[in-house]
Image (cartoon, rainbow, N blue to C red):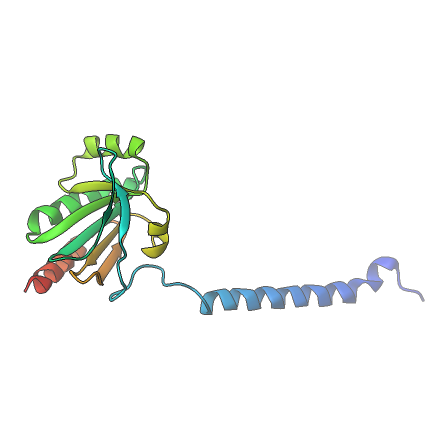
Length: 179
């Protein structure tokens, strides 16, 4: 008895599906285990110079090195979690002496200025001029808080809304690095 046209191709289709599943599994495995950049800055990573625009529209660069540490707050004006973090960042800014505290907006000046006026951060806010910043600082989500030592090395970074434990940890790190 002869096979119908639809059933004679069944073994070929099964083999093709098995091969495709195998290729998909291999690619997924490779993407999970090889050549994946760290999700966020790690302790000891080098913090690079940042090209910015100040609220007056003047272009300049921020160098995260010098005689003091830098506490960098990265945010977007359309991010509800960033708005929720403003109070936490203000708390850190007012309790940090001897350190430079900077807010860095990923949005343009036209949305950052109204955001600053509405939320009154106690720290200086700049606007990133370069998408290179997002890559070099491994910004995958906001809000992002980065503590950088005076030699431009990352002390630590925190993603998301800071908890009271995070705030205590940052204060402790600031005090430890002050001595």
